[in-house]
Structure formats: structure tokens, C-alpha cells
Length: 328
Length: 166
Image (cartoon, rainbow over all chains, first blue to last red; front, side, top):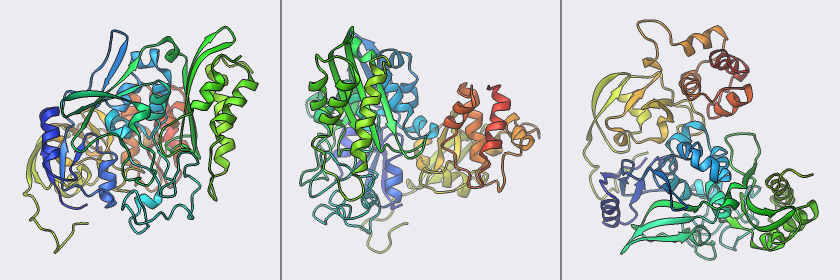
């Protein structure tokens, strides 16, 4: 690991000030992503601002809104009674990610900012437009079995790797950001940027801005939510495909639904086409299949990842079957 | 690896750091880039904690931080001032093995032993968390600890015996 300067923040405001003083400064919370990427020389921050002791760990339900502090640990949030009761998909997503040790260290804010697992990004001898803008992309014609088929560009096909953000997308969550002039809320779906021709810009965060929390509406629809993760091994692995969904049912009819995909797109992918199909339709296999086909209609496969399209469609049907009550 | 020659500024001075190691206060002066794992092995002489992948993938470096299992290879030592760190060296009391250590011996839950410190620390936490009620739960909860010898069946048996799992 390269040498760097280490400073400790004693408030969110001081964290932002300390980060703004030095170009390329990074916040340190759980360390699980940052330290790994620093060892690989992918991240080279001249200054690391330790925010791990800031009082941003609370999980509170107030006036129908659940607020999760950015420094709450993944394992604590996953097992929190309010989360399990009101947002089962969120708990399931968190518990499906990484390992027990990593979930104990990883934080909600840090998890949202985890970087792609694209091997061409994480190994500095390859060309990568995300790591070195303008250098090219060796994944396009490389070994791209794990790469994205939705939201890609000629500059980048790297998959967004997380589980948490996919669940938060289906649960219509907002990210709370501290910046110039105080806090603002950005919806999860607007927080992540498609790669386009600037894949190095991944989120709406400006330099020195800090995620302080996540907010979710305690809507009855969110209690009927589910996260399904499909991967190469049963545990401690990133998603090939994942599905987060939340539905409001009136008898056998779907009043409204939200469906988001992971492991298959460059950002946590809100499947708006699928939710349009689901809205007002009867909750049966035919509807689920139509929604699944609509969700993947715009998919652009590369040499090794076309299998993800059918895998995702099947996962969508299975997730909807589960969340709608297991009718076969 | 540390960059040489081209660095514009001299490396920052070591930072004083005090934490509790296996019940005793311990003081160090460490550079910011020293991980908790390297602090334990290289500065504190506690080589029971193993460096496997050093990238958060194998679990060999698992320790307890304030009673919770974490990977010491992905933690900066300086970020753990004041924390209570428990390593494999801190489990036995008055010369008697910890119950999990004894169960690993009893069930022959290792072959080469390289992953064993991490497996045992992880198992201590899993049992304490009460999330080892079935064999499937144990396998899921222990999935962050990789064993290249493939001693998994006996590791699960050792945890199951202590957790009273079905």
C-alpha cells in the first residue's frame, strides 16, 4: 500500500472540510472496499479521512420514515427488528452480501459506494476507462461472463456489484447527502450514473460530499418485498443476477409494484418496463413472464454473458411468485 | 508496496496508538498504512493470526474487535484506537483451551492448520450470536472462512456440537 496522510474527523462538517482540502481524499468507514483497492493500487488517496467514529449509526422510525445512519453496520441493519418487519427485502439483500466478518465492518454508506468487481478495473495492467479515463476497455472483447447487459456503453460494461442498493431501488429509498448548504435527499435511482462516455463518474456525489444516511418510507407495500440473489456458489459471492421487488396486492390483482435488478447492469437497475406490465395485472405466471421479458427487452449481451438474460428472466418470475404469495 | 524515489513529500510520521490486545493495554507507533493484521503479526508478535490472501477473501485473519468478528487485513490499525482486540492467543484462559478450541481438537476440525485461527475466532462469534441453529445456518455463517484442506465437515461438526444445533 502507498503511504498516505491519515486524519480523523470529529463531525460530518469537519469530515467534509478535511476531504475538500486535498484532491482525491477518501473517507474511511469500515475499510472493506477502500483498503482492498488501495492494496491493489486502484485507489491511491493522498489523504484518508477517518469518519468511523461519527455518530451516524442510528436506525430510527419517525413519522412513517425509517432513517438509517450511513455508519450503521450492514449486520446491525440486516438484523434490526424495524428493518426485518417493514423492509424484508433490505434485510435479505444485506444478509446475502459478503461474509459475516465483512458485514460486521461494512457500513451502509460505504456499501453504496463499493466499486465494481470488473477484473479489468481491479487489475492495473489492463486498460480501463473507469480507472484511467480514455485508456480504453479490455472487458469489451475480453472475458466478460460477469459483465453487464443493461445500461452499458462503448466505454464501459462493468457491473454494479452491490445487493443493498438494488433492494433500496425497489423500496424507493433516498440517499441523504451532506454538502454545501446542508443536507439534501437524492432518490436511489438518480444517485447512480450510467457510464456513458465518462464511466469514472459513478454517482451524484460531488467532491467532499458525504452520505449521512438513507431514508425509506414505511409503506405497507414494502412489507411485501423480497430479494433473490443468483450466483455461482451458495454463499460469499457476488450476484450473477439479483432481483428486488415490492408489490401491493388487492386479492389476485397487482395494484402497484417496483422491481429492480442487480448483477446484470452498470447501475442498480430499476426495471420500469416491468413495473408498467405488473401494474393493474393479475398476479399469475403469464403476467410474471411478460414482466420478465419487458425487463430484459433492451439487453445487449457480449461474448460470454448472454446467459444472464434468460437467468434474469427466470429469477424475476421466481421472485414475483415468492412475493405474490407463492402461487404456482 | 511503498513507492520510492518519486514521492514528493516524506512519509507521514508514525501515529501513537493504544488499544487493548487480549485484555491488556498495548501501545504502538504506526504508519497509517499498517493494517490491523500487520500490527498484530509484525509489531505485537502475535503470529497466530494468519495472513492468507491479505485481500479480504479467505478469512484467515479473522479477529474479534469489541467482541465482533472482522477481517484484520482490511482494517487500518490507526482506526482502532481504544478498541478491544481478541486474537487466537487470547482465547485460552489459565492454560485451559477455550471450548471452541477444544471442540476443534475433539472433532479433528483441521488438517494443515493455516485457516484454523480464523475458523475458531469466527466460530466463537457465530456461536455467541446464536445463529448456528442448524447445519445449513452454520455453513452459511462460516462461509467467510475458506479451508483449502477441505476440513469443512469436521469444522461444522465442531461448531454444531457447541451450538447444540440440529
